Length: 280
Image (tube, rainbow, N blue to C red; front, side, top):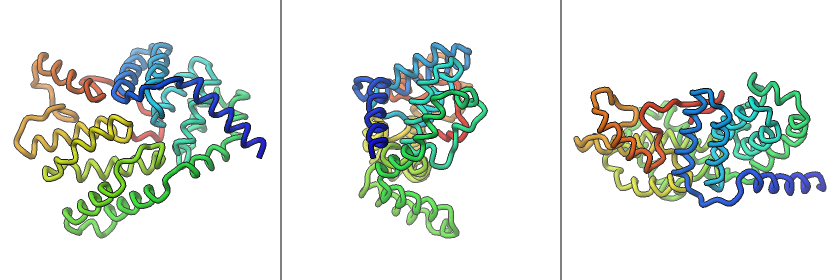
């Protein structure tokens, strides 16, 4: 009991030291990490890590894929205490539930340190803490909806399947990854993209925007849904996310990037940085 209590106090102290005071600005958080990704592409790893650290101070919790990118940057700079902190937080958000990211080749230098031993000694406690803090009921309902979607019942009328999903969202709202773990978060992402893109569900855009501002919705999924709703009405896409932009003028691309920046959406031409097992 004393060990667990000490770990909890230590964890709180580390969290405060990493993240500091926040204004919970997820739009700025996403934009800073995109610039961090650009610096990774340019091989400016030190600057990239500073941008990620700055982004983390903007919000009250961090998406686990962002933590893992930052952890790999910290490994390259031999900042192993930071690697421990980011790895711990990733586990507490459920990233370690099915993905043992710490066994990756990139984490090999970390595995040679005392911080890794401390991490492994505490791993089961971190996992149990995640389970304790997770809204299991929400996640199980979301997972059952997804399983229903990909089962033989997929032949059922799409309107009926969409209705099941909308009833779920109306009842439970959009949950953050912190609430339901990375698996549940990605499940809602995929279902939202399937059903909120339908023109008749345009009324959900406001709810999506509210969820985006508190980290419960991903910017790129919002952009796709918004554009699909536009195109269903034979209107021009607004964000042009995952759409052909080759024929657009420089001025139009600049305008689109201003729109994207306002909502924390990855700019045109930006590089995507992924970690193994990271799907968003």
